[in-house]
Picture (cartoon, rainbow, N blue to C red):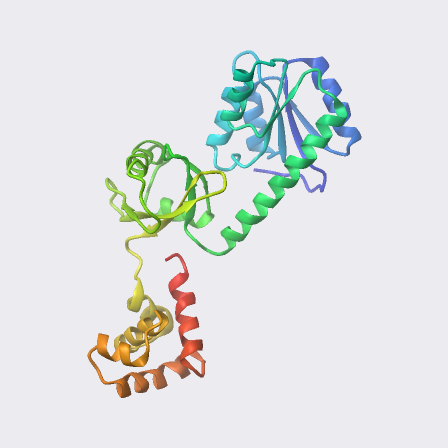
Length: 304
């Protein structure tokens, strides 16, 4: 998707009424916002995919594809799902307002639109979206295989690393939305505790999902795990250039075990543990067991 090199907020206004479009267009331009317009839902989806807007003003009642269906399709696209959508409607029935919010809208305005109220509401949601995007960017940069899903098992958001691993495992969009969603939905029906793992079935590549909890939006936070990725001592050996025994010692040190406890676990004397640590320190460029444990924990934390 393209996005113009501009610091102005980009607003997509979707309405089949030329008069409403004209009023809103003038109001937004006066507020120094860049305005894109669409007359119906399908056109709005095409524009949003080509030039990603910062916020969308969406008429609820339109021919062909109404605002509710348009919003649901926007939220089903991972690249567009985080865009805040404000419904504009002449309807005042509570059921219609709830319908818009359930479709994924963050707010609604009743027509005729009041310019000052429109700008004030938009500023709030643009600010909230920036905070949310900053948080997601921080997660993206951590290199974690994290994702959120609805309770129906549909992916709402995921880091680039997650999408890369899904592609590596040859998980198609259709399989995600059908088979994977079904497995997640059945798993969630049993209210899995944090730390519980679901091994996905029906794939040639081993993948698993680890329960991490719920987000503030009540979405399910999951970690996608690579079944072919080495873990524990094997990972330390590969990443840090250690021997088998050194990697085992460091693994248990990183898990908070004392030298005596490590010796008991690995069936050696404590003095031998010390000798292994003396070999490990220069390999890692550290001077003590605390620093060595820190290096190990960073390695073990990546995508684990």
